[in-house]
Image (cartoon, rainbow, N blue to C red; front, side, top):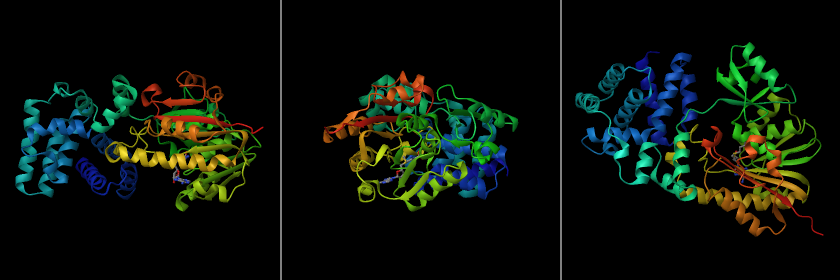
Length: 451
Ligand SMILES: C[S@@+](CC[C@H](N)C(=O)[O-])C[C@H]1O[C@@H](n2cnc3c(N)ncnc32)[C@H](O)[C@@H]1O
C-alpha cells in the first residue's frame, strides 16, 4: 500500500468514527485486516487515526484562522483531511511537511471538485506561511486548557472543579501520551522472569513492570502475536486494571463472584490468584460478551471460571444469600480514565452519561451485597476519573447499606508503590499521570457480622 493510500484509509476510518460514532479501535483493527496493511504502514496508519482524534480540538484551533467559514460547516471529509494533514506536520517528525501537503491536495482532487483542492492547498500554504496560532493567547483558563491539551471544555471544567486546576492539567497532558503496552503474567503457568525471557527469546523488547509484581511492559512487538500469549502465559491488561485483583485478595478455595466480568481480564487474574482452585462465578449481562470470558478461560487453562449470562442486578434470583467470600463489581462506567487508549471517549461521553452510569453502579452494588457473607470483601472498581461515579457512588452505597464498612485493609493488599497514592486504607483514586497507567478507581467494603 502506498503512503497516500494509508492516508486515505485513515481518512475513511476517521469519517466512520465521526459519522457513526463507531469506536476507533474496532474500526482500526478491521481496516488493518481488510486492507492487509503491512506492519510498517500499520504504524503510520494507527498513528494518524489516533493522533488526529486525540488532538482534534488543538488542530481545529490551528486551522480556523485560515478557513473562511466555521470548520463545522465544511464537508466532514474536508475538515478531517485538513485535520489529519496538520496533525502529521505538527506532531510526527518522520513525515515531511511537503509530502503531507502534496498527498492532501491529491486526495482532495480525487474526492472533490477543483475548488476544494484549491481551498485545501490555500489553507495549508497560509498556515505554513503564517505559522501556528498560540493557545496561550486564549484568556479564559478553561478554554485555554481545553485547546492546549485537546479536551472538551465541559470535561476540563469538571476536572478543575473536582481535582483542582493543576491536577486537571496533569490529567489532560497524561491523556495525550502514548499508552504503554502491558501484560499480566499467568502465575499458574510461569514466573514473570520466565515470561520476560521467553518474549526476549522471540525478539520482543520486554521488561518487568516497576509497579506491579505480575506485570510486564512490552516496548517492541505485538503481545497478541507472541508465543507467550498463545501459550496462555500472558494476558493483555493495563497495570491499573491489575489492581482490582490485588485489592480483592481472593485466595485458593474461596467462593468468589465477578459480577461484571466480560471480557474476563480481571476474572482471569482472580482465578490466577486463587491458583485455579475454588469457585468463581463470572457474570455479564451480554450473551456475546460471556463468550469472551470463556475464550480467556480456555486460553489460560483456568477451568474454575464459570461464565454466566446474567444481569448482576438480578443475581439474588440465582445465588444464595451470604454464599460468597468475595465479590468484585468492576462496574460499567464512562471510561474517562482510558482516554489515552480510546481518545474518541472524550468527544462522545457527556456529563449525563456519568449520572446514568453512576445509578447503574449503585444498583449493582446494592443487588449483589446480600450475596456476600459477613466478614467478606466487596471491591467496587471503575476505569473512570470522575467523582459523580466513584467516590460519590461509594459514599451513597455506604449510606444506604447499614452493614457495610470501608475495608481499611485493602491498601495493604496492593503493590507497595500504589499504597503510597491511596486516599485511605479502603480507597484508591489513581490518575493517569501518577504512574503513566490508565485512570482507575477502587473502593473496598467489608460486611459487618450481625451479632
Ligand atoms: C468495565 S466492563 C468489565 C471489564 C472486565 N471486568 C474485565 O476486566 O475484563 C463492565 C462490564 O459490565 C457488563 N455489564 C453492564 N451492565 C451489567 C449488569 N447489569 N450486569 C452484569 N454485567 C453488566 C458490560 O457488558 C461490561 O462487559
